[in-house]
Image 1 (tube, helix red, strand yellow):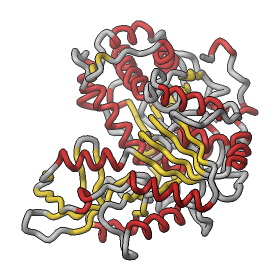
Image 2: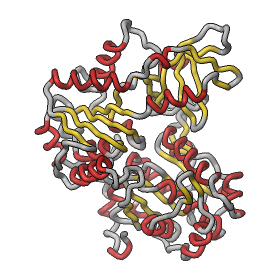
Image 3: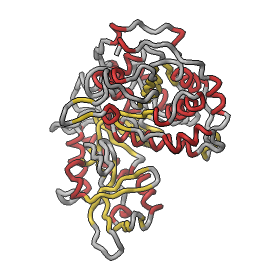
Image 4: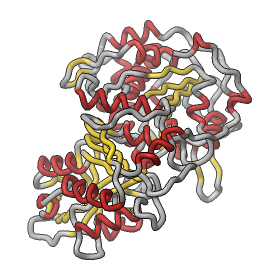
Length: 475
């Protein structure tokens, strides 16, 4: 990576950016106006061969991506077919696609380049698909001697990319290509090797976003969540007695009491047990289904560990909650599920969350228990017996699985014993910043304090190949 990050900056992007911002996207809350730091991010991305945009949740990274695309088209840098959008997971790529398309459609007075993007912008892909991974050959189609043809490559969720995959991306870039990587340097790094996004941010042109548009700092609960997250990021615990963040310092009995109260708020009620009719792709009660999913997506229960017999692992918590809500071993309607591996034929991606519902093809046909998933403004259903092998219950998920998501209310269930290599400041920060309105941290306060004092320590070697970027290049 270090050997390939040189390159001359491109022409000034301010004029092209100014022209596209004169034709903004318009949302129900009004025109989208970029902040000064967002404008700076676009200009840096279009002026450097490799650049980083780092910001916490809700700092407007999608707005920056759309502005980069529009300004690049306005400046004549690329055609839509020369643009590649990618993310580490299919779920993140699908979310990226929906957000970009929605923003482009919302441009009230589109420029010619905007119309070209809407008509010809390639769909975001996983990074493995972008590079042409062949499972049978165990290698990528694109590499140093067979580079990508795209001249603008934008990667989302950069903190989830390990050093080996990032090296393959950089190695596959053509001589005149630009790479923009977006993410949050303070979040959990990739499950595999390295904290490459965080290290790259010290050595390539980087813009750090500080203003959150997800959490409303003017509301007491929003400002409290931001304050607690900032403290964790600095290695300190700040008071958590509300209104936005709450520490529940409880023992095992208290943990179970909290979980029972959580279940009562998270259960979907009688609506989830009705039979839904889906005929020719149309649902019998789409508004009711949308309301059910809004409730299902409003809360997230997060754990630090996934496997194991300890009572705070994802496996143990899901089994315990299932036992509380169901009188039988098999899964039942109303339970949340999560996809554990990609299924490109069904467009199901690792990390997708759905709900089990009874679905029938007509009002007179027998219903089948099915996994139902939201896809932007529509819903898809797959019979449970066809996809059971790639699903898990999702009453609780790991903090890693929650990256990129947001919820009104989040609970972080602390482990019942310390895990120094797993339970770190980044885990706590990532969990807290998933919440828009309220976050609960449940468990041993002393254990939490130790975790907040620890940082993920990984070596990528990037710092040995590049000098730190000059202060004037950092914002």
